[in-house]
Length: 206
Length: 206
Image (cartoon, rainbow over all chains, first blue to last red; front, side):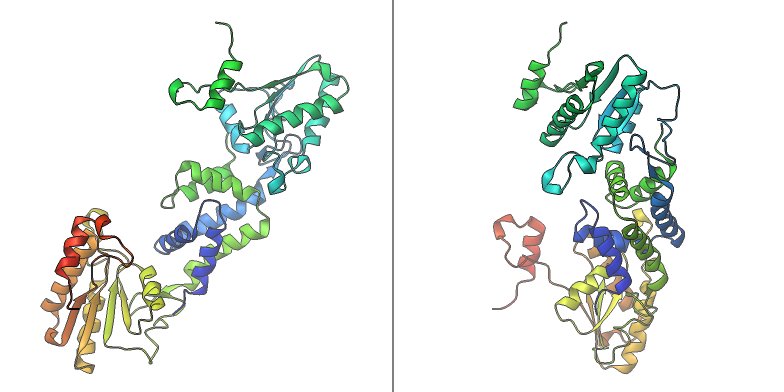
């Protein structure tokens, strides 16, 4: 007896997800066998709804139910400040801490090994937005909040370079990078060397 | 900005799966955002197909595309030998090593804390099968291959007791338990105490 087709096909679907290996995929599939049918139906529905009802904002590439997204179309928010993030999840993190400006979501970092270049991250969208913004505002701020990994750092550097090279009047754009240092509650003795030297470099007057 | 509904609903669906926490559920959902639509469609289809095309065999509770399952309806297999297993995955494990008899799948072990009793495991189905089998065969064998955990051991003991109490002519039924001992390639120094004493108890002449 072989594993019946409907089961092996679902196992394959699970295996394609990141971080789920063959054994987990089997376990999940057999778990679902014992779940009431309506729950599986709603799972399947939620899957198909995802792509049907969610779009990328044409402006900032946030994922939302409409484009322009609810942030881009909110006139109460600061239009002259843009946080550049690698992942759409980062948006919700900044929203939680009360940030009231705009975003630009890259959906990744520059990573040539995984075929992710400036094209895929649509960095030209940011350049275009900045060109428009400096016509309307005397001062614009771009906060580079890509991840602090090697890829995130080089993506931040690349974007900063692109802005300076491609936006006429880039003097009106203040480019900053989020602080890298010891996390709150973190022990200095456990911090890695790079974090510690970054924390030292980025020290502020007290 | 809150997480859009279609996204939070899919995150919830993932969170319900065993071993997937809130962070993994988020990561999986955002991963799927970047996957081509046809792949999500096929994932959703595989989910709904699971319940529609897979049934429990009325006889042995194996999961298959038809009932009686392909094993119960295969006349070439040994009808007088039944392996009792806790999980449907165990069936595929025994199939791989060339077992040619029948099965009884419990879909769990007796576990009162999780509301799993003899009723849920449908142990009466096994009793009924055995009653029928001893009319047709001079000797019937039941191999108890429930897991070697505490729950698996007590389930095996319970089944053995139920057979002796409920099947008239149980003398014709040979009840055995799979061997518990040092796994092949295992180091004796690393074996836990219970496994080691079981291995000693179950020693065979050489």
